[in-house]
Image (tube, rainbow, N blue to C red):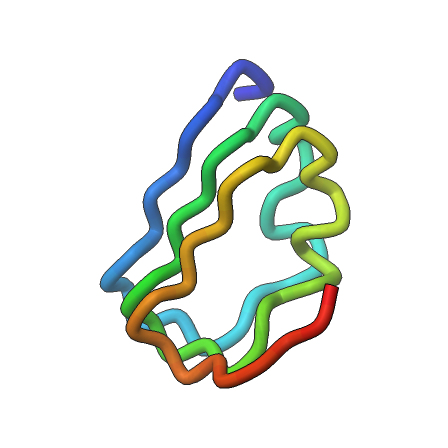
Length: 67
C-alpha cells in the first residue's frame, strides 16, 4: 500500500492513534483526520509520513499545536 496518495479517516470517532498507524505509507500526501475526537495531532504516527503535504483537522478537539 505504499502508492497511496490520499487517506480520508474523517468522521470515525478516533480519539488516539498508535505510533505505527501510518507505517508503510511512504507516498501519502494528504491525510484527513477531521471530525474525530483527537485532542492533539498524533505526532508519533505522523513522523513517518515524510511526503505529507496536507493535514486536515477541522471540527476536532485540537485547539492549538506547534510544528
